[in-house]
Image (cartoon, rainbow, N blue to C red; front, top):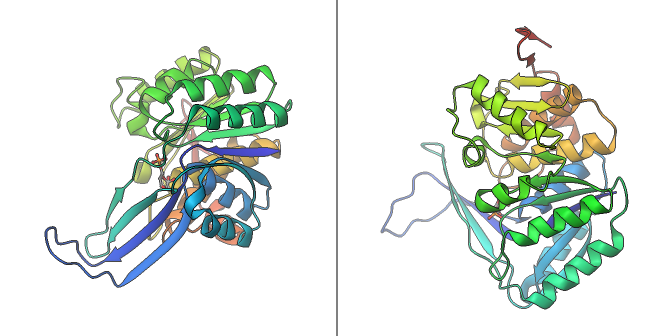
Length: 315
Ligand code: TA6
């Protein structure tokens, strides 16, 4: 089974406006509201791919009904720990004239020690060998990166596979616990290694150091510049697919969904990477944080061209 763990979900409000005029009253002509947060977005795209997952994590008690109704409508199973307070609302401002995407992410509800213990007990009870756990997103107040470190340790002890998508200190301390897969974007990767964005060789050689230290797959997303996938077996690069971007929010989560779904289907590295790029392209062609449909993903799949680095040939 695939489990997505979102410690800090969000209600994502995507506001479309021609141009944001600071310090003035702006009237948006279009707004979308979606249940979000990284793990939740992963579960949404796994559903689109025809897979199944269970969404775990914390959820604010005071506005849970709307959120749970949204997941029920999408037939996404969940098993949250409900905490005091509201689940945060994150604002995504899309300025259509200049194609500028601005995120305003809130901190989120305060999580108490008792809530963290409840979550650990639940995961300790359900996690089994070969389950796939996706740990992704920011940490709410009351938690620190040790929560992710402890979770990765517990899941590895139970023989589960861990896909880890975090940033900053949480990423730095989490990679030392050897999660099976990490999916940093290039900015997050640069917190780990001093690399230049256009220097593929240094990005690949740095990623290979993580592989030598026990991580099995490293996918580094670089937005419109494409992505790099380094595994125990190969190093791949791909340009991003040509796509009319409607919203970049959730593109990385879509790649994580492809990786977790691909692992659950025992897909090979080339197929997983192609699927990840197709999911990201299909996602950014959608408004708000809406997941792409399977046929939209398949539409991009045939357009994805990979290069096996060091062999200078497209596959
Ligand atoms: O990646 C998109 C997204 O998951 C949005 O749903 C938005 O809520 C945000 O990222 C949350 O990210 P954060 O790092 O704040 O947990």
